[in-house]
Structure formats: structure tokens, C-alpha cells
Length: 241
Image (cartoon, rainbow, N blue to C red; front, side):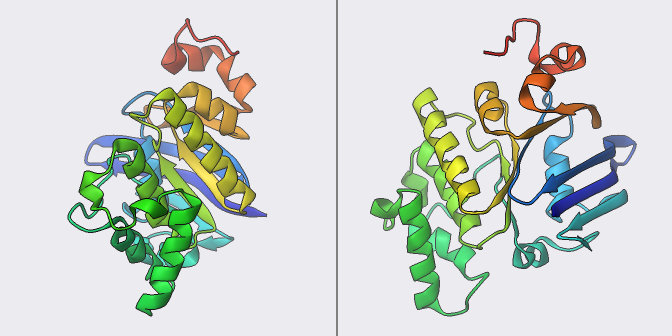
């Protein structure tokens, strides 16, 4: 079943076209990678899908239903959640409080919201930090907290925007395992990432955009060997291992 269908998506900002007639779709349970140079329009694609920006034109369908113009909180209740490239937790509040905010998308009972939040924290190995203020966390733990807040909404599909940026190599490896475990839990993953060894290891399919337009797509090995992708993004020094 197609969980996401994006057809001829266009997003303009004044005279700038950030996304230019983009087409893509995803099967339920898939991991799809979206890559491209800085400024290519990747986060704008996410923002359109997640309801932050209304598309200038085109259609977005989630679980077979048009969601054109729907607000982020409505999409969240439908089962679509996202993380943000720049992590902004409620810094003066505890880790548990931050995750409970997500839980309230599914329940209005504080005790139940806390139980669900603690389940997510245990899964992400953050439960020992539940009473720590979010502003005191390391970058790696903040990245996990960002995922935890999204997971607490109980999504069917998760948009991950550069959740590995700034992490050490061992932390990247741990994040790859977490994302694989999310898929094992039945969550569909759409991911933007610049760390190529991670995106190549995770993705079933990769879409490459440049200046808002799709220039390539395919399985990781095909995309990595595409001359257009090498010129626009990867560079001649990139070699598929």
C-alpha cells in the first residue's frame, strides 16, 4: 500500500521556486532517503508534507487521502510525525515533560501520557535521564529526545530531518540501529541525511534533488553511480564501498 504520494509538488517563495514539480511515493514500511546539496529544497519538501507550508501547486496524499493544506496537528493525529533539523526542546523542562507533550496527541490523561512517554524513553535508552532538564543534554541525547517527542505521538510514518548531524561516528552507528528498529516496529521512515554511509546503509530507495528538481532516484548503489548525482552532490572522490 502507498502510504505517501507526492504528485507534481511545487513550492514558491516569491520569485524563488524551492520545489519544482517533484514526484515521489512510498510504500508502507519503506525507508526512503532524500539527499541533495544544501539549499536543494529537501527541508521544504518535508515542510510541505508535514503541513508547515501549503504547496503552491501539486498534490500530497497520505494513506490514500489528499492532505493538501492540512495543518501539522491534524496530520499528526492522522499518524504523520516529524523531527526538525535544528533541535529545539523545551530546554527548561525535563526530558519526561518534553516527551509527554507528544503523548498528549493520543490521550488527555496525564498518567497515561506519562506512561506512554516513559515507554518511548526506555526504547531510546533515555529513561535514566527522565528528570534531567532538556537544556543540559548532550547533542546525541538531544537528537534522541527529538525522535522521542515524535514517537510519543504514535506515528505510522516518521519524517527524520538530519537526525545524525553533529554526531560522532559511534553515535551515528547507534542512530542507524535505532532507525532500523523503528522500521521493525512498523513505522515508515522518510529521511534527509548528509552522512552518506548512513543513508546508503538505511535506505531501500533514494531520491536526489537539486535546485528543487529530482535528478535521480533508485536503490543506493544505482544512485551512487549516477554521474549527475556525483557532479551535483557526491563529488568525484565518492566511491561506493
